[in-house]
Amino acid sequence: MVPATPADKSEPPAHPSRPPGTFRVGSIAGSDVLVTSSWFLVAALIAFTVAPRIEQVQPGLGFWKYVAGFVFAVVLYLSVLLHEASHALMAKRYGFAVSSITLHFLGGMTEIDGAARRPRQEFMIAVVGPLTSLAVGLAAVGLWFITPDGLVQVAVEALAGANLLIGILNLVPGLPLDGGRVLKAAVWGASGNEHRATIVAGWGGRIAALLLLLWPWVQYEVFDVPPTLFDYLLVLVLGAFLWTGATAAMTHARLRRRLPHLIARPLARRTLTVPEDLPLAEAIRRARDQDAGSIVTVTGSGRVTGIVNEAAVQATPDERRPWIAVSAVARSLEDELTLPADIAGEDLIVALSRRPSEEYLLVEDSGEIFGVLATSDVDRAFRESRH
Image 1: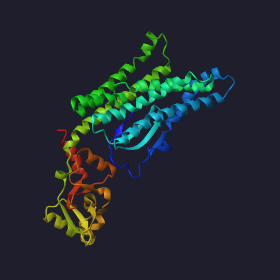
Image 2 (image 1 turned 120 degrees about the vertical axis):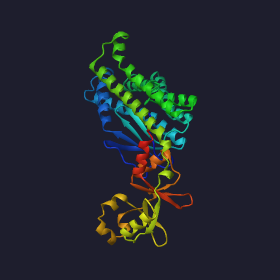
Image 3 (image 1 turned 30 degrees about the horizontal axis):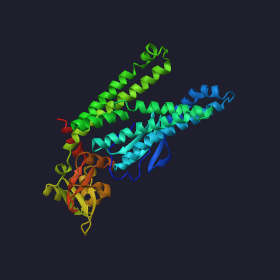
Image 4 (image 1 turned 30 degrees about the vertical axis):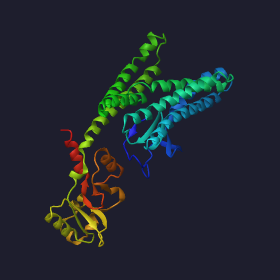
């Protein structure tokens, strides 16, 4: 599965924050490989599940059969890592940054910074994962015939079955599975409408979730195998995962459809530049006289040093304003607080989320100041775009 997270399409975050409850175990092609604490739970579950089979093949191991089962879990998740790494490498081939690869209770997740810009990119990034799993599964099937009896053969047998199952299930045409992204790419390519494609693939995921709940009935009626409590619990967990993932994808698609209405230039406030040592009261007076909605501080040479924070100005009592410099209520101007005046849509949202602030400086290509963009104005425009 490859949930894509909108972010910068060319550079990864300078200091990516690690999600709570995760451990970094290495990196692949510059992307962190993380393991969640829930992985240890599923590893223990796998160890106890395969222990009877290990005991059957190698009697007398005692406690060591569980250790062998844990090793099987590690080997299995290494193949899951291959699945996710293939997503990451394909995404990098198309120029996307990959923040991390995370192994968790239900498998793995590759966090790709940015969304596919064309159907072919969506298709290739999605389909390569299941194909990798199928390739590993088929290779393990071939090895099974030449592997001598014993624990190694049991490991190869488990590797073959698990990867074939992962490959096939991930091709189910419904989000958030890889097959859902393949379906999305197909509908997107045929209709030219990415939003419609996501909605179709999302409904595919919801239908898959409902059908999955029928598995215990199929297990009993078709295969004459009475379902256990674990079977019911498993389909409920997986069904909830599919339903919530599909719903989240559909919600995100509806939000993205409104993003083109967000354009920084018309939202910018007219800006007044003042010396950074000017008294705050005088700066406010000049801004009112010139009908400016924002104030930027500059040095004597004209270099911009900060953006006056509106909330800080309002919190400053009137009687103190003549006695403090305007720079005292200005936020130092950092690189990520300067945005191109023409930024719009998803690029605008990504820039704001990368470095949260209340104000940003908009500049022309020439370097000339165009105005100041307030986050509150962007939020209001986004809410109004629903109507």
